[in-house]
Length: 282
Image 1 (cartoon, rainbow, N blue to C red):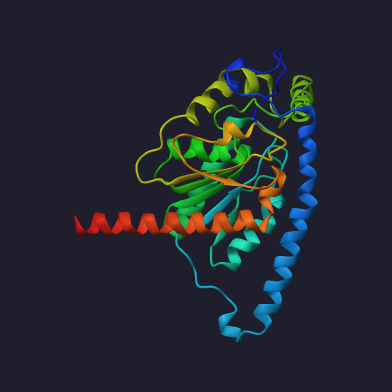
Image 2 (image 1 turned 135 degrees about the vertical axis):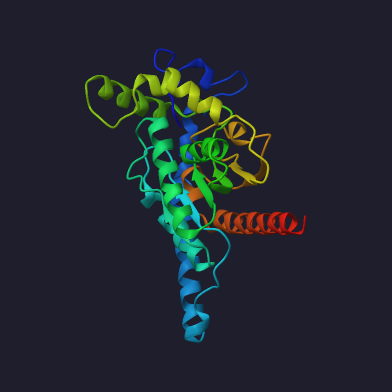
């Protein structure tokens, strides 16, 4: 997310009418992260035991489609999506990190960094890249798909408030305000006032609202149990919408959500293959 709800800090355009931050107690729902991570551990242990009983040659899943990059949310880094990346690799996907150690800097700067990373992966693999973005990472993915459709094969967003980035919990807003003040004091690498209320914020937001070019499938995953952002802001009318039952943070580790991500990436691959086949037969 790129803003706070305090009017002195955040541009009002980041929270349009009809959206509101989750209530003060909503963040308590994020406590289910413990159970969601435990569910992942149980699944991973069961799969490990099952693989041990297979012949060595059958322990690795066949490679699937385009490469996949995972982009973390605000305050998070690549480590926050490490378990999801591991699960995707077990299903045959070739995954890549965004190289973001902590997603706390200028939004446009983060977008430029992500673009350069996708250019490198696309050149290395000789294909476009599917992007899975959690929270703010999904907004970055959405904007990048608009700006560089030649690099993006499809996007999956997880709890990304694309319609109202400012509709987030007060605790997150307070954290963001601290970053803005530190930036004003001269601390480098943090979101500045322009990133939450100026042209930087406006450009990022408007870019993420543009229609996607043809041929880029887009799936937006949301949860009504989200205790960090207004779940309604995650339902992009231009996307295939998919509802899950998970906390905001838990979407990155809950195996039930990861199953949906796997199925979605596979559908995107199939759609891409059909598009290529139609183009070759035309």
